[in-house]
Image 1: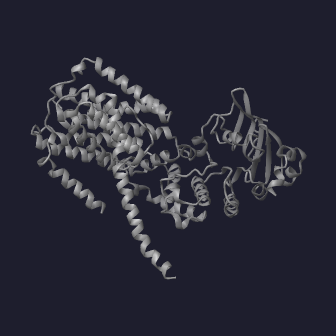
Image 2: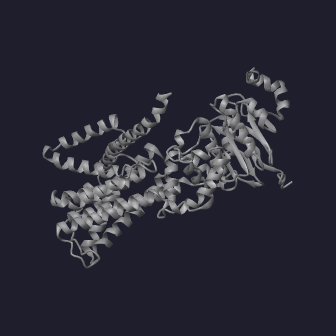
Image 3: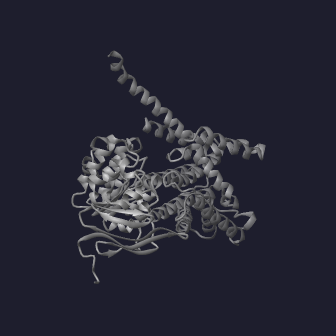
Length: 319
Length: 257
């Protein structure tokens, strides 16, 4: 059942560019990776980072700068961006991770605003105008990826790699400790672990994946702007994750798809797009706490449980 | 003079105190817990039992005094360091990992002793080797048939048993149990008391407990706290006959009989 769904998803992703505008699809994929990075923190460690955009945006600029000023190949530029974000993530984690809940959120927010203004003032970013004309270097230094359809499959492959990495982390010995920290941090400490070390590493991995998404995005559009670092993007990724389903691997992917398509469809209505987002967020929090994927999963489990109970109930009736 | 602890005391408190603002929740408490004994901390509500317990486990840092574990001063260490030195605490509210399975709960604790906790690129199968030991521990506490259950779905008594199995995974020399029977019905209290008795073999146990019948069954010696200070220390018969203790409880001792 699960394998069938995964295969269906992969098949849909492979044929999608023949039916949907590839740039929209690539935008969705970038945000799928971005939301996955956010979910790793909130869904599996219980850390609400309200500044995730700093990792996305910083890496977009770093990747763009490398592509503009050097001959390095595409994947190296993106990985370099991701690495810079991972280092920033470790640093923010080092400072913020001893606090939890709203304090943690506010510290990460403050860092994100700091990064925003730093990038606004920096020479190399182009300030208000953003960084324009980022070239799309060859992949591995040999493959030309300037064709949009070809590049879609490159981005799809990168997305798959990022999700596999997140999957590996979640289902690793280390991931077990993360889930334990989410469930009961004092208990983890009492068992001889130092929780903050696990959280700092989680921040760094999450920031690295977010940075990977930022690098992908810069390569897709050929420009990087301050929007990618702004707090609205940090908020949007929260919406994506909650809408899709927190703490499920597929939830944030679905959420990212829904929000990007919705933004695209509602763009013509201007401010109304934001109002629609707000209303949807309120509805999800009030009625669909588990998000789209979470609610669907719960629905199937209930049906399975009923199917299992039914035969077991018969002997009792016979008595 | 330099080494008054000797090997006979597993845990010792020398004049520990904790100040919150201008209020001393615990003041000048001395304890000596002989190796291999079960020692209870009792006292009426607000006597400072829990604060004292949290100081011993290093959940709180003492304002004054020293805590000595196996002859080593642990006053400046934190809970995780103390755990690595063989002293592990439990919690009043069952400290389990609710969203994980019973087996995973115990395996997390085993990861602490066996390292591998930072391997974020290895598959889960790389720690399957710990499952055997985890199953042994679950069998010891009577949870052998529940390993695939979600910890949140266990009954209250079984959650307690799981917590004890998780604590035992670290093979601690000293176990500190914070009200292990709190909130339990009669049918659960007896098995947990038996279990604590069983796991106490070869270990030193400090227990904070309200239920005086559990205290009388289990403990070798009892320290009675009142208003943050030690009122007296002795065996159960000595303590329960003491007029100051009876006065402190104001009839609470009778209730427990």
